Length: 174
Image (cartoon, rainbow, N blue to C red; front, side):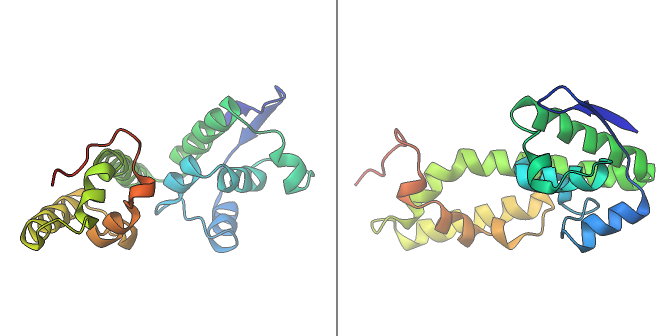
């Protein structure tokens, strides 16, 4: 069992079991054994839904959600991660951790690349250069070991529109 405090300072103790794991996976469509931890780390609502299943509470979800903001979300996520580590067999947990680490590294890499990717949509970009960059980007994606259409070269470039590029990003020289 792992423990954490909510924003009001109340202690909570959580533990996964096969039943609650199935409810979280089947009802809420969050598969901790797949990419669910990544989702919980990035989506506060999903995290609170999982916490609501794990915690022994009679509060409805809306009331329960009011207990979590700022640092309590971080400590609650770490508690869920700890409870998952206690639940899964060591080999499976190692694979889940490896996947999560790869996903985090890939997300950081592509966040840093987003300003450059936006330039691939520029009308002045030579098609041959665009093709070379797309091939290299595809190789990088393959090396992450992740299988996600949201991280395909085309999806990344489509998402890197000028409105998504931070101010101060280098301009394509003409």
